[in-house]
Length: 404
Image (cartoon, rainbow, N blue to C red; front, side, top):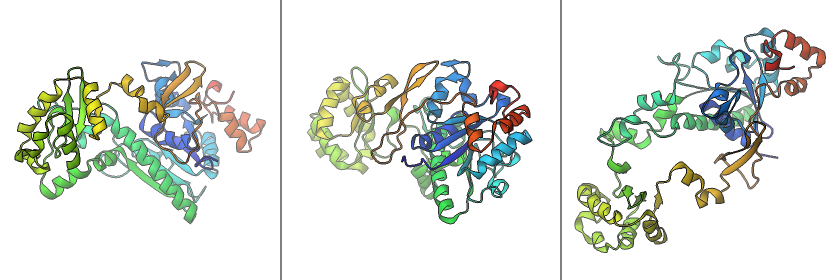
């Protein structure tokens, strides 16, 4: 069996952060059942351009492979009844909605524990379910600003800058996956579930890590650095070669000793200004121009051929295409394929989460409501009961949205 094959997750998820969290669990074998609202056309990720046609998008495929979908109107009492039947047979109710919404729609532990005392209710919201911003929507870009990320990102002479990827969203997804697994462990051990009150805001603040510790305890004020330089280790930054850029990092003294030999400047190691981390930090304005002038004399490949064999941490600054075709990317099996009726073969990156030697199997993302009938029958509903529920609007007002 796959690691999570005996786990069912009811997921009221949408867009990026929520689906990204459950994606890793689905790849590990969990039955992630997307509960999609027919009143709004399901997960908004289905419609994200530029690669979108109808209800299919490559954005949606990225975050929803290996999942199933049921169209269900929770505001309809009949749809609510189906949802409650599913809660009885599930392990987790997962959502990424605004902080005040989970309680409004009745998906907190207090509201569901009578159906299943061991249910784990995980809510990944923008700002959490408490606090002055609980009712506000939270988006990655806004949170990067609020949490101070943008103040330390970008060139010192440029404007505050967001990260190139939606790292608050994706990190929030990982936080949710970890919390779900912790909740599952506790529920199976104790027979009692509970709430996971998670937020993107908490995630962004938590990722401030050691700069926050330095500030709280020593008054440290982080600043933006030229060429993405590390705030305390010199040299550890991007250097420009004749045909591109590479990153060189001396996180240990031994790497500095190796670097100066590899670039044919061994005398730098004996210079009293550069003998250790502290001195290199104090004299960075003198050292870095020397190194920049050296790296500007040859190509990226030339320097990689010198530094990598010498054991100096280094790598090219790739574009996305180069990263996806890196030898190591392919060797690690990080590109996976699924078959899609509209897009044909869809290639995407694999989840980095792994256990054991068994490789995941990959299945395309579900069409909206694709598994509604299968799920209904798994609950013991016969044809007559399914027809009654469909007529009552449990699966949506348009038969095409739910069960035909």
